[in-house]
Length: 410
Image (tube, rainbow, N blue to C red; front, side):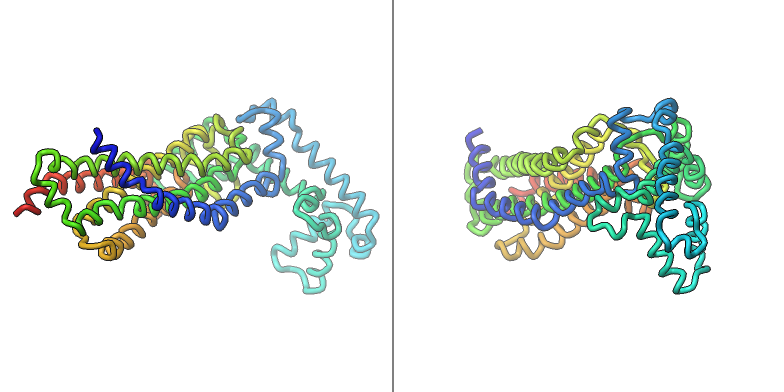
């Protein structure tokens, strides 16, 4: 046990930990804080404005039919249309173009979507839209508070929670793979009624992918100096002269795994806390399976957000352990630190790449591993891939451990 503790102390060198802390701070200010800020903004400045957040506060994590009726989307839309009709009646630019209510404005605006307007008419349309959007609002809050934006947000809510069947049937009729079809059929059966903030899982997966890449890099920085330094000094050969010495290599490997897991858990926890504290914590027990009419896709499994967060953490841990094993193996064949880094960099890039394509949009139909590589045929291949990296690293490390003494002494 004392030898194991000693090896742990060698790995957890304060200089190495200080370097990792410095890189973590840089990663936070350059990337993670920006992603967190973007996520915060989308809670009130997304396709639903603040309506989805309001509905969650009123009704909890699912929207029942009677709750949908109570929210009265048609009534809210009528009130906004009346507000815009008053604006239209008081602004000369509308009457000058023979537009006297919102319905006529909408018909005129629809011509713009089909390129049936002249350049002058497009400028007129832009000026009229500006009137309904609050006369050139200075902030996003002002823009989203305008009647036209609120109406657009309500229409998005209506498309998602009332008129969702057509969208789901497109998934069923498309060639996206049996897993996607099964998810769409389940949503039709259970209703598209989960009120979790629509962009939360997508934003969280991007955020967690950055955490995953950094954690993989941290594993390299943590493990690389240990065994390479021993190899440079030929300490491994001296160790074979005693019974205890012959155990040290195995203890080094155990210390490698334990220290990597401890550091990875610490980094993941430190990264999760600000994201959850920013408002995502209230969705911890909310189910995430949903579809919206935008291009962000369908969430494939009806787990809670808390379960989703833990799965992503597990994926990162698996990749970190795999990277630590690969670093441990590479040290076996490195005569010095420079050679170690030359070999570790491409391996690290490969594992970091796996982190990006696996964690980003994980458990959604748009995940690259799920959609592009396996074409929607298998459940959660991105999760399996991360586990595969860890298993391969462990197996190869064990093989190296069993051969180490014989190879070096010979």
